[in-house]
Image (tube, rainbow, N blue to C red; front, top):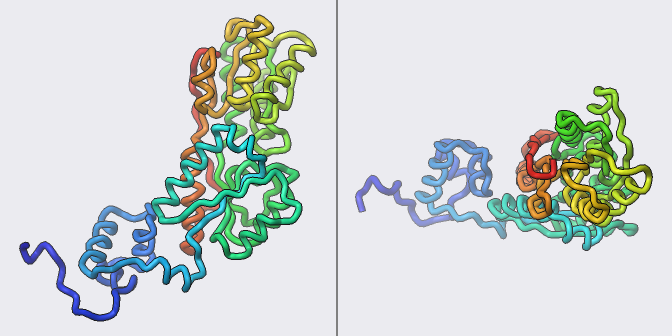
Length: 343
């Protein structure tokens, strides 16, 4: 092998350290740490220099020793204050978990799940405080979930979605739900519909509140108000029942904004049974762009939220906190209107 293909040989002795790798690569210790832990905020040149130094020095990360020294477990908990039927039945959670796991796996972290619709004995807070995990990621929180506030005081926490009870210092990753409601309303109004109803998401959750608020704002600007507002609880069954209530209260609207694709699936079944054609009689705009949107008939026009990317971003923010960095407290991801057959 040509001599210039390898770096200078290292004499036998103690194992090389992170500091030695940094010195050989000409970068900071934190840059080496990010490379070793799967970080992405490293320039191509620095990444190449660090990998070359690692190869030349024969550096091998000793994760077990680092865990003992830093008391890190390299495990992060996902806390979902929902029952398991809701968690496993909603495609939103599958997309979030896929994004979280993808990013954490690259950093050699594991993801643990704590699903509970309520936690009267503060088991989640005790689990995080015990040092069994390095931090907690929380999604799908409600205004009634007081235990989450206690959990947030036990260690590093990143919220998926704006916290129901925000406190100074909270860290969260979300989409602009209010703007999503506005986008849906603008699309409906541009189609000339005026008798407009909405099936809102759970109104004890910031996402449900914000989507409804944005929708109302744009209608108000046009001199209109929803002819009906029903809470569908972010479920297919809830969407069906909400649609039944709307029809029973005063006839069919000519358009609906339904704040999740799952709820829209339930509403579509009710409309079909009532002989109401979509989109001819009633235009529908959903929210999520989950697999449900393209599986139902007619396929849903919907607001796409990047749930997988939200999971990646949440995990990345947590990893930055655990690395001693100071990431942004608030991260908003963009939304997109996807036009299909329902409107």
